Length: 124
Picture 1 (tube, rainbow, N blue to C red):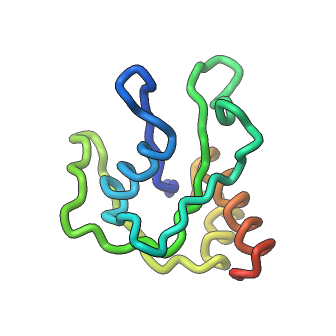
Picture 2 (cartoon, rainbow, N blue to C red):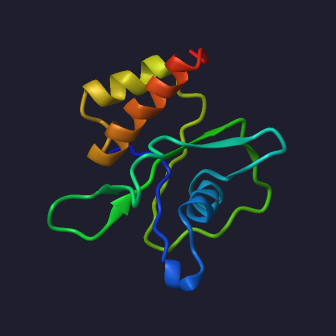
Picture 3 (cartoon, rainbow, N blue to C red):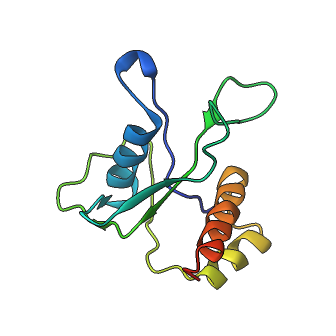
């Protein structure tokens, strides 16, 4: 099963959605923000993010990170994380993963939002 970079944060420990996105980029994808990187909130109008489901208190706040750089000193992954990073996935390949059920549900929703943003802003 494939998924996008994702993580959690706790406000009480000084976390924020933006910090979590940056940490998870490093930990899960070995990427960091560069001088020209844009961290774009995909749903700024959703205060508090999207609820995971009606039974959970977990919420998602999706971001699109453009022009990241390789992180030579990435954050250490959690022991239970078994991650294979796929680089240079085209919009067509991403769409195929979604249509063939090879991407988890939250990642599917946010991948579609990211593709929409890229199309709307003439990146693809």
